[in-house]
Image (cartoon, rainbow, N blue to C red; front, side, top):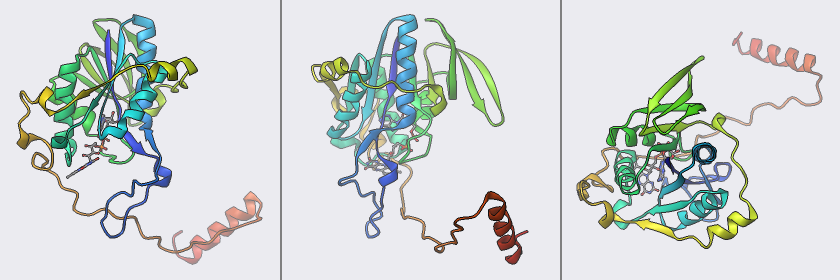
Length: 263
Ligand SMILES: Cc1cc2nc3c(=O)[nH]c(=O)nc-3n(C[C@H](O)[C@H](O)[C@H](O)COP(=O)(O)OP(=O)(O)OC[C@H]3O[C@@H](n4cnc5c(N)ncnc54)[C@H](O)[C@@H]3O)c2cc1C
């Protein structure tokens, strides 16, 4: 089985700041990590490979620095890595990004594609389902567990509001992973060594331009435009209650809510 995981390199959210003048993310000096849902997807893919055999490939679209995320995935045990990168791809919104990734995935080949549900910086949860649509694949989002899998189908448990769906989906298919799907393994020492022996394959515009016109990618091919980004203003310092027993704390909070006619 050929399993391909889409991974996005994202800034470590705890430290994300927005430049108040330009409205863009301040990336300098901010550590980058593999988006957590995607790391979960890597773990699920490696577990599936251990069961069924085959290979796990990782694909990331981004600047050359995304190389580090791909090497981390190789060090976790993935077999091959692709960096989708070209000047023509810059400024792409989710629609253009998913078109580019779909083109790259066609080149890589797949039986099962796993994406994260959501990237912690863009936060739209659109890219996975859009890739599925563009490749005309059956897709299951919010996958919490891979219950069973063969070369022909995958059975998954899907989170659904206050319940679950158990869905059997034919391969080739696309799954979007949520954090509960798996606990990502650590990189092994041998894995880190191997990761730096392996080549990161580059997929550029020339490699996928068939079926991908210039006006379908980059800023020109992006139907949405981020008009403004800004951090929420703090409403006030708030009140911190200290050195109270749980009972005293409850009493003090209820009193405050009553004072403000909230309850
Ligand atoms: C007008 C506009 C211009 C933009 N310009 C830029 C820009 O110049 N530079 C820039 O960095 N961003 C840019 N963005 C943001 C960029 O479009 C999004 O970061 C990207 O499309 C992914 O969306 P998301 O973060 O919401 O991912 P989600 O849809 O939340 O991600 C879901 C899953 O899709 C997969 N995925 C998402 N993105 C990638 C990726 N790049 N590689 C591999 N897998 C992925 C991951 O598995 C992820 O967990 C722009 C956005 C807009 C609207």
